[in-house]
Length: 234
Ligand SMILES: [Mg+2]
Image (tube, rainbow, N blue to C red; front, top):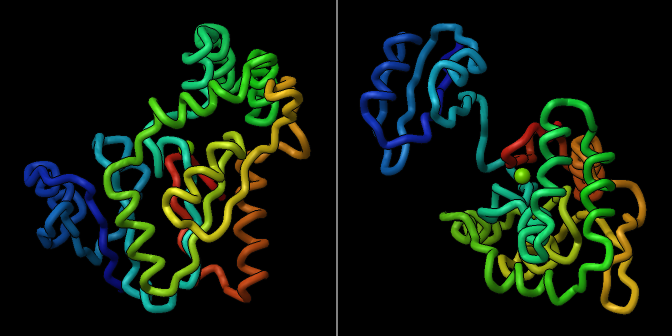
């Protein structure tokens, strides 16, 4: 039976101990996380439901030196905010926008519809509000810069894919020195957004297609690609 390693993104010994006991694993303490090595079968989704901690599986067959491309989400992943929510807050339209978010979370709207609705609420918002959000409300998440620098300095291509607006994705890409990006183009006339999206909305499926597109471009198989995000990307 193969050994699998569970990464516990926590520095709390008790949490790691509890999980290790459950999956009959051996704990390895690292600087900012624990690794639990086990031959026991376990369901990571059950563990995630039972423990309020970020968990990932690291297969022993995983060969880091093989990785050639890292694709990351933006909102709540590389940066600490949801950019559209922050634009709405900036212009006093947050309560309207959050109603749509709520509807989407209840499963009544898919991402593409919810994006279009939220964007239409923001009709007339000037691009200077984007600038204000970027300058005053946007913070990189801890470790984001180190993460990108690490990949870049190991000759691993980096890409950003976002269900947010191109304006922010491009700025974050440039700020972090990411190689390439994809996000939603929105129509801007006379420095105001019209409320219309240009082209197909970047939803979960489009994110997966983008990863496939880049893999083809760089001639990579799926084992050479890492995808990072706070939501299901594939
Ligand atoms: Mg996100």
